Image (tube, rainbow, N blue to C red):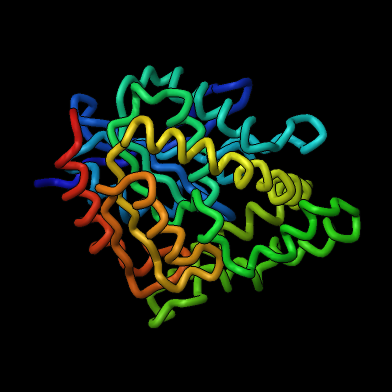
Length: 289
C-alpha cells in the first residue's frame, strides 16, 4: 500500500491561524494528534505515514507553538483552557464528528478537556506520556510547583532555563539508550520557535497555568469512570517528567486500559515510532468507527 501524501494546511480558529498536518483518506476514521512542549506537529512526522495508510490523520500546532499564530502573551491569554478553546474551534471548523485522540505532554490536558466537553465525539484515547494522575509527576516538576505556590518574579525567572537549548536537547536525550536515534532537527526546530521574540513569556505563562491541569485531575478521573473510553497508554519508561506510575494509574478508573512501556525517554516516538505505530494500529482496530 502506498503511503498517502501529507498536506500542510492552515485554518482560522478562535481568531487565530492554526497550522496543521493532514494525511489519509477522508472517508476513514479520524485520529487527532496533539503535541506537547516544546515541540509541534513536527514530532509526528514519522508517525503520520504509519497511521495514514488506514486512518485520516490530523495534527495541529497549538497556539504559541510551531507554525500556528503566537500572539504576544499580553494580547492572548495563554492558559490551557484557552488552548482548548482554540482546538475546540479547530475541530468545529473541520466539522470533526468522531475521532480518536492521541495526547502527549501538553496535548494531554488539552485533549482530556476536549474529551470531557465532547464525550460523544471520542472513539478512544492514546496517551503517550500524557499525564492525568499526581503519581505520574516526577521531582522534575519541583521548581515549577514552587512557582505555582508562590508566583513571584524570582520564581518565574528561575524557570527560564526550561526554554534554553540545553534543556530542550536534554528533554529529547534523557533516558534514551542510543542517542544517535535522535534527529538533531527536532530540538533545533523547537529551539528556533522558543527563541522567537516574546515566546519565552508565552511558555512561562503556560508553565504557571499548568497548575490548573493538576487541579482538574479529579474531573478527568470522573470522565474516565463515567464514560469508560478505550485507552492505550504508550509510555517512555525513562521519561524525566512523567513517571511510569502515571501510566499505570489509568487502570484505577479504566480497568481495561492497555499499558505499554518502551525503554526510552519523553519523546518516545523519536526512538520507537515503529513499535508505537504498530501498537496504535492494533488499538485503533478495536475502536468503534
